[in-house]
Image (cartoon, rainbow, N blue to C red; front, side, top):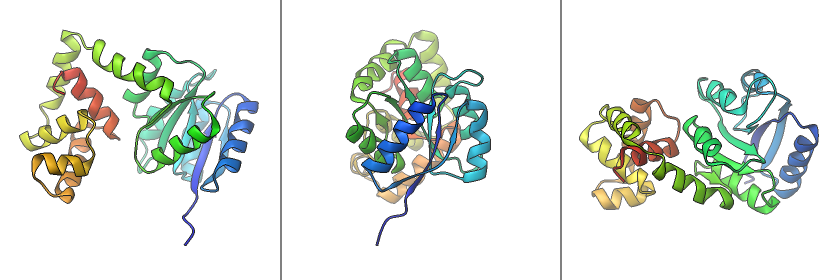
Length: 221
């Protein structure tokens, strides 16, 4: 049986970039279907509500509404799609800001097509999508930018969790999968999945990356 295509909305103010991404996704993998395009973050919510995509590829710098603001708006919708940020700028602040906004990934526009397709397929399945060039910056920024105030704020946020939920959150911060957490904490995978869902709900997050960053900030990982 053929898998259902991953329905994608592209939001980028550069028409040539949109065309290039369309060619990459259309030619690099039959799993993707571009269902709509937008030229500014101000269009993102309307396009998502109209087309109900599985994923939004969002430029981070746009003239009216930037990608980070648009991402927050999209992820505030009921049953939102996954959002992957696209940019030509590899700076720690932008990467961390995008992930804190709830983005499921952050890819540079010069990422080779095979790597981009693989990363987007991973994001569609719930994994983190990061260009190899970006990954080191994310780890460094997530650990080095945590001053005392950020640490204290993060720990205050984690107080919303029960002891068992906090245990799972810490393991997420260490990069463990649900199966690995189950083995570490001697729980079933189903129990861990349920706990992860409660952690996300209590913290108001949309994905595991946000939990991991909070745990890093709290210096508990």
